[in-house]
Image 1 (cartoon, one colour):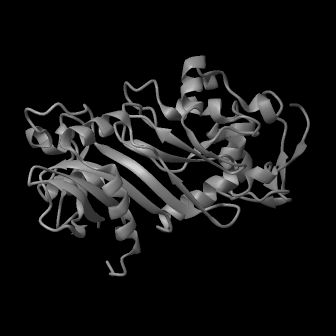
Image 2 (image 1 turned 90 degrees about the vertical axis):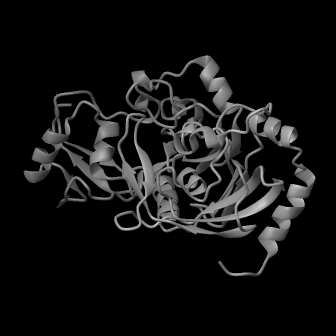
Image 3 (image 1 turned 45 degrees about the horizontal axis):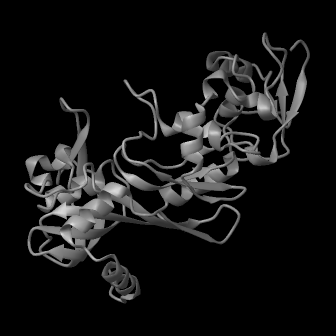
Length: 336
């Protein structure tokens, strides 16, 4: 591009940071060079000097000086080479859509698939999101995460404005998240609260969290027993009131009822020897209710995964009775 351009901020780019806007539109421009252009006032927004973290608004005009590189990417051209997704992965991900509208997508995350990439993790949901772009001008964005082996409701934003609104909803705890877990053992109370601060610590098997009453961050989980088999196992409803890493797993283990299949936090105690149970972590993001970016409220529920259902059947848990129990729990007037 050899001339100065004034580029309008699209409707769905509101609230995105200026540096991220440039990263999408001008991927060849380094962050260091952008900072230099901003300091010199060569990049401006509505004629004013701004910083890289400036939040854009729809309709604003960004002054873009001559750059050594291609013209700004728009629409379908925003797709990058690394955004290519295999047909099989795209098909499977689309089959897992639980809700779709102009601002929000909700999918039913499978077990064993990481949400984001990392050391040694090449296949992950974040890398598959272009398969869920459909007619939008940009690919969906992650607004929260689930552990690799946790199943269930995963919320995605379809544009920057929705991402900002949803991220705020998760941050200020205006979302209501319900998880189901099958645990080894039974809590001492049928309903209660786990209020144990957690701190991260490195280890040979990767990062984990531990209860740290002095230096840990506040972590609160409310729970209720849906069904139990003597003192052997229980099916729990879990409501995380904070969003710490591995919070539900660490809290369940801390009260002596580790989640089945969670060797990292429960070790051998996270098993029921001699029983033919479904393999894998028995933690399922069952449902979520949150403010919709375009107004109103959105509630979505994810079906029970196969391995979870296998264990329910092996233990004799009654899904109809569970439905009645959940209705009872949700209509109770007691305060937490």
